[in-house]
Image 1 (cartoon, rainbow, N blue to C red):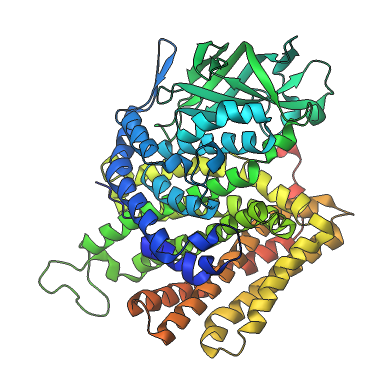
Image 2 (cartoon, rainbow, N blue to C red; image 1 turned 45 degrees about the vertical axis):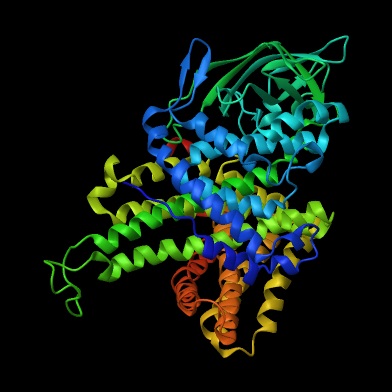
Length: 592
């Protein structure tokens, strides 16, 4: 009973009136005029609505099956894959030298939101390939690029990332998968990987696995890890498929959600692999993909929040229950629609204000990624590195919360499979866990990213907020509802950072105990900044008399809600941080 409509007007607003992409000096952005992006987004929205969303429930109910050593995806998945592949959607932002369309990552991010909202389990197959393509593009040899990239970009082959093992998740220094060098320069890999998304399936004729392993004689710990290309099938010199390699799916995980995506146990039995990048530098190669991969997971959080909100809103407009306390709104019916009730409005506004702010934040992150890669801009790369744990951690935490709020809007109906909201809750939950749990994101933020470049990158963020406030302080329409709350929230974020600097050396636990609240405090400030930018753009459009005034007025009203009802959460975050670690660490382990 679920439906989905791509929020094209909202995406266009962020791209062209907030980020002003066509006026940017980033190479390739001159092609992103409103007509072009509109045509791409409209077509992507149609595919999401008509092809992918109808398969979402099918994938959830059927799941994947391992039959005679072959993983079968749910009915319709392969046909959908072939349709999107034929349309070139897998290659949207890939290198034209290898068959890609060369569009900016920003546009691919916008499209990915629609596909993910409609069917996250399906969208992950292309998402994993995208990460593998990026690693080979950056670190592979010319021969490796020529061998693998054209088929992967075209979609004839797919790709995966193999990191986790039964005994290690976050601590990859504990990896046991071995790589034995061979006389011909290849390696034989033996070991087991778990929780490998899209690890095996029948939708492509070959799967190119990127596998972290330890070569013989390498140092212990993280310094001895290398990255290898291990194809499911050997590739002949002419590029054709050869014999089966020594890699197989040993089982499928039984999961809470994303049932339509094959989460595999992968066994490597002297599988032939090829070193990518330098020996013992596998983590450097793997982390090439991390900013992009974590940005995509951040997107998953609000993308599922979007479709959950759309369906919650539809229910609230139709469901009749009770009467408006201020007067009957539906005199011809037995009751008023539940959207008249303030608590339902509060619920829906929490959802709406988060999703729209998150979209702007994520697209800003994608623009920074393009700026870093297409202009070789180190400042942009550093800013993105600072923001990535905030994007991933905050947007997936709040995205999951949004799906729960949407489910709550439906009351008892939300708890049933018939209405579909409970699937969004289950599917969204994994985003808080994979690509580094959100607890790890918060530790990365305070332990590594906050001190990046001696703290200069964090100071650059604070200066960006300060500059925006100063540039717009004369606009009374912005000042009270937007600038003043943003200024106060930014001060709290700076106070928290100062507390960490003053107390971290003498008591590291004070920093670690406050890291999660700091990530959320930072996230709220970022969304506050996005809403201030969006309000400025909306007022400018109203002043100019362009576009749909109702759209801009709604945008301003939604932004005011976030600043008044969500940004004050930063006060609680700061209070918790300043309380230190004493109460957190007070109990002995035996007393839990």
